[in-house]
Image (spheres, one colour):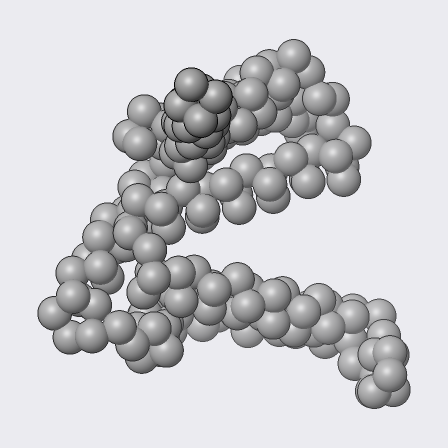
Amino acid sequence: KYTSIALVSLGIFTCTFMSAKQVVRPGKGPQEFPLPGIAALTFALLMSARMGIFQETLYQKFGKHSKEALFYNHALPLPGFLLLAPNIYQHAVLFNQSEPFQVPVIGLTLPIMWFYLLMNVITQYVCIRGVFILTTECTSLTVTLVVTLRKFVSLIFSILYFQNPFTGWHWLGTAFVFVGTLMYTEVWNSLLRRRRRRRHKEQ
């Protein structure tokens, strides 16, 4: 299972690294040093995996309460955003200056950037709520794999949406992710067991 996680991580690293090399800044050539950003994402992934293990320990000790864990996980860091208050205020002003947008069905008119933010919050809540429910039902390793695969799907979607080249390296990274997922779910082992059962029945 650890080998499968390593394969999936290697696949995502390959796709991310090759996509980062294709980024061109205005007036400059391709970005030459994407590694710090990738390292930061890798560190965040490792920390989220560690948090998953910590949550698993909490659930074993105090019971499985996913809603409570979700609340405290987001409520406790809120005071830290006070440090970013000026920046948040500036962006709120920019959001208010965006073009008006009429929300379908409701008919409410509001700046389009606020609508985008609202949609983002709703979809993020659905996603993170599912992850916290998953932590109560599965091991932290399984949750890490699911979250990593979700990030991989987002990466592939962004490549296709922004019409970036999908090179051979991207296919290689995709193959790593696919093989790693099959290894983790033990698909091959179950197929081998079925074949053995069929042979026994035939005998």
